[in-house]
Image (cartoon, rainbow, N blue to C red; front, side, top):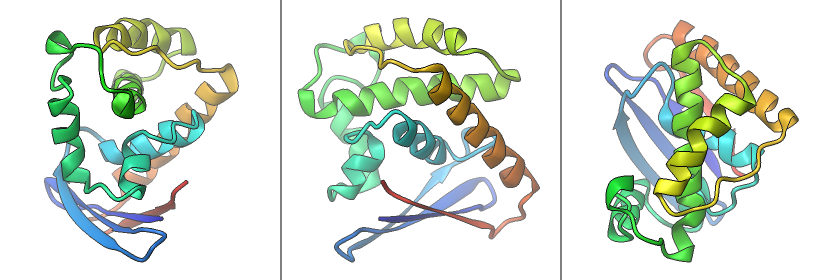
Length: 166
């Protein structure tokens, strides 16, 4: 699958071409200095989360469906969460970890232990196990997000960044 994220003004655009040739497009508002869904690519790839956000998109789900899928499973917020359906466990794990890595970016950095200290209670609140994160995986995630942030901040509107999945 090819994922292209185009930098916009106040929102970014995603164009996806799946392995079967099907295409889907969507847009999403800015949530921070880098596209949230790009951080999903980095985290899910490094931690081999095959059924996270991008795995579900690759399997045929529209990106906009995935929020509804999590909400239907009781996970619109951790405070209302019950034990999730097995089909969305990795999706929830990915979301909790992406939030933690975004917090590191916004806060100027942090250690693997910082991520685990945030992710543990967050995953627990969503009734999912916190995935193991090795030092090398953490370093690779932080490095890739930092590279993305530098490129994205410097890029003008219309800039396109492409990834392949998996």
